[in-house]
Length: 458
Image (cartoon, rainbow, N blue to C red; front, side, top):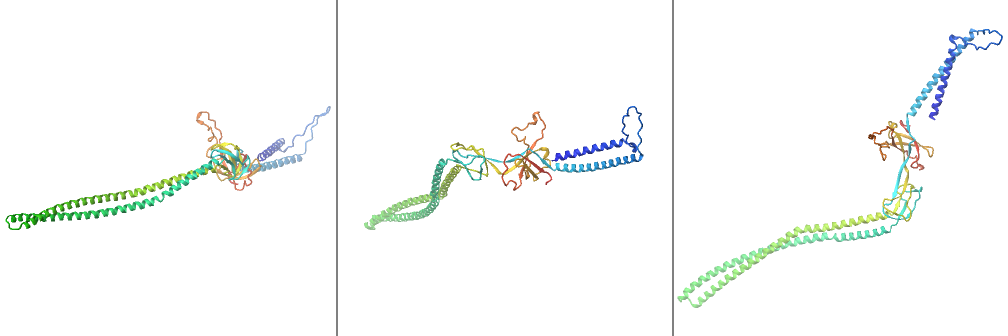
């Protein structure tokens, strides 16, 4: 429509130029207000040519004034048309400079490949190509029997690990109580052994006193025996008194031996009690040192069993996940495409079974020339004409491109190789639809469109 307007304006300018040219030619043929020369006709045969009568002067002036009036009218018309043409050209230039458009654009969106996460045999397919599916809808079923067995095995292992944890939990307080009791018993043994040592020490000292007493009595008895021996020799005492002194001396000597033997025995008892005290102290030190270690050992054992239970639980969760993966569901709403899954097919992890084209989350990828991006900014309104429906949609510029299409291609250009040819590059601009524009979900990925970005708003 814009090109038709320009063509019509050009034709009108050409027509006005032709009329001005004709008017100038007519004025040039009448110099100084004279009338144009009359038309001449060939003279009839056999008659002399006679000059035509000159027109009156009044009619020549009127014709000159008419020509001048028409000339001025033409100039005014040309001026008005030139002004109209300039105004129209200005508005046309402003309009053409207020937007950027391209026909290298299409509807873009997400094509979600749906594949198997585990290996298995397909036992059911519930979607066909071009079928609309909802999020969470079951698309493919894999045989779950093997994974059900794995789940039962993992659950049994987890229950066993829990039982071991429950059995190990009481061992910590039991060991704590046992070690505390052992420490207390050892402390009591040390106290009792110390008391026995003290008693043995006292007994030994008493035996030493007895030895000294016996030795003193024996010395006295032996001295008496010597005096009695002299006296009996002189017959100053009776033989009976002498015999009694001999018996007393012998008895006191034996008492010394007995006291010394008791002293030695008490010394041995004292050494024994001291050994028992040292043993009790050693047992106390051992109990005090080993008590926290034994408790730590039990706690480590419980922690180990808890870790085993956690590992068993993780294994159970993993096989339960694998069991859930036997049902392949749609992650989004969309249309099924490229279905390859068939009943009886054995699939491997990562194998694509179908694709889903999202019909709600779509946008426009417009490949503008690099010379068109100077005034383009995110947020500018966009009018999107979709060829399939001959309908205009409203949108806005979402993001500006980070690189040209050539730079992100599989084989980007290498300008340093010497075969450089400057080519105007195209960069993909992402355009989003405004809310409510695609409520009928008729737009499909790959449709051609022509976006028009209004640079100054609209």
